[in-house]
Image (cartoon, rainbow, N blue to C red; front, side):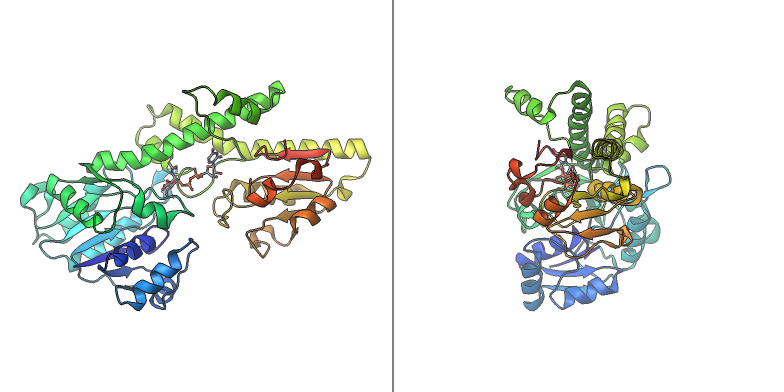
Length: 417
Ligand code: SAJ
C-alpha cells in the first residue's frame, strides 16, 4: 500500500512521517522544491519537536520520499493551506490545484482524503472537480457506494509544539461522502492512530474542525473582554479568573495580548463568511480578540506618558523593553503573533530606544527594520524604564516579582502582576 500526502507543511509532513512509522510507503508531494530536497535528505524545513528524527528514520529506511510531482498511489491525503481571499472568504485555490494535479493519476479503488481546514461543502466541491477532470471514473456523488473513487474529510487537531504526540493520541473525526468512504478513511488512519477515529458525514466533519477552533476563540475573547472591563474597574483580572474558576462549573481561559497562530484567528471567519447573519457571537469574539493588541499598545503609550510626566525626562530618553514575541509561550513561532505586532508598533512609534527579549530566537526579525536591539532577560530589566510583558515564556515567569522593580509596567499576561 502507498499513501501520497499532498502538501508537506505543518500538518502534511508530520502526517506523512506518522504513516511511515507504521511501515506504510509514503510519497510526499509539495510545490516547494526546497522542502522536497530537504525532506529527501532526511531533514525538515519547519520547526516541530521530535519531527526531524522521525523523518530521518523514515527516509533512511525507505518508507518516505518527496517529490514535486503527484504520482499514483492507493490513497491520497490533501493537506494544503486554505487562506483568505477578499473579505475573510476562504480561498480554495490550493485545494483546487492539488485536486487537478491528482486527477490524472487516479485509478479505480483510490481513496482521496481532504485534511485542510475548509468551509462546509469543500469536500463535495473537491469531489466535483475530480469528477469533472475524470469523466471515465465514477464518484460517490452520483454512484454512491459503488463509486470507483472514495472521498472523505478528516481534519487534524494537533497542537503546534505537541504534534508528534497529539497526531497519534488525539481522537479524529472522519466524514465520508458515503459510509464506505468513511470506513475506508478510518481504516487508513487506524494504521498509525492510537486515539479513536469517529465516523460522521463530510459536512459535519468540516463544521467540527471550525467549531473546535471557534469555541476556543470565543472563550479567549471572554477572557480578553474581562481583562478590559477589570482594568476599568481596578480589579486584577488574573486573580478574578482564578477565583471564579474555583466554581465547579466555571473554567475561564487566560487573557493575553490577542490571539495568534494560523488557526484560531482564521477558522472562525470561515463560519462567519458562510453564515453572516447568524454567526454573531463568533464574529464578535473575533473582533474582541483582534482589538486586544491595539488596547495593549494604548496602555504602553499611556505608561510611557506617565514615565515622561513623573521623571521629567524627554521621551527620547525613555527606554522600553518588550518581553516575548512568539504567538504563545515556549515556542519560537512568530507567525501571526500579536506580541510581535505590538512590539513592532511600539518600536515604530517610540522616539527613544526599544529592546526586545525573546529567549527562543537568536536574531532580530527583519520586520523591525533595525529599530530594536535584542537583549538578555536580566540585561533588559536592568536597562529599561518601561517594561512590557507580552508572552508568558518560562524564563519570564521564573523571574521573582521583586526583581521587576519598575514603576511603569504593562503586563499582558499577568506574570509580574
Ligand atoms: N491564547 C490565549 N489565552 C488562552 C489560550 C490561548 O490568549 O487561554 C492564545 C495563545 O497565546 C495564542 C492563541 O490563543 O496566541 C492560540 O493558541 P492555542 O494554544 O489556543 O492554539 P493553536 O493555534 O496553537 O492550536 C489550535 C488548537 N485548537 C484548539 O485547541 C481548539 C489545535 O488543537 C488545532 O489543531 C490548531 O489550532 C489548528 O491547527 O487548527
